[in-house]
Image 1 (tube, rainbow, N blue to C red):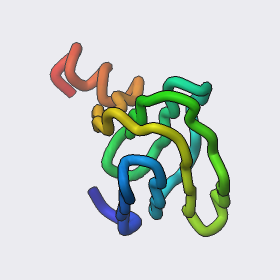
Image 2: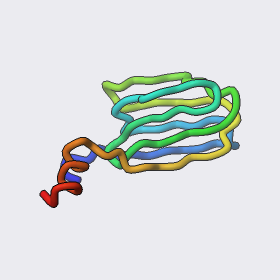
Image 3: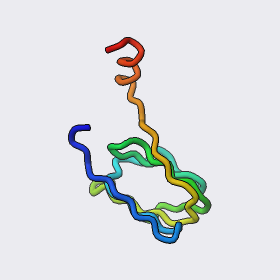
Image 4: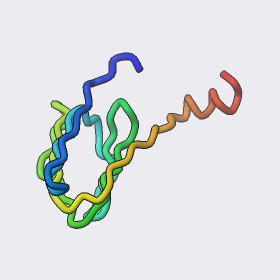
Length: 88
């Protein structure tokens, strides 16, 4: 990807997560937070999750709670889906 923003994450004792390179937050509740970065969507799952800090201007986010999993999925844009369907 061109113009990728550096993305880092630091997890401390599975209770405190610090992230950089965050572009947006698609959804959040106490069991799951879905954050968007240049590398796809990051799904943070756990219990009693709480976004302590979020600054989309600087791309920083911090999360507290009992974190059980972190997983990335590639977010498909409608353009890339059309290209795959029609061979573009």
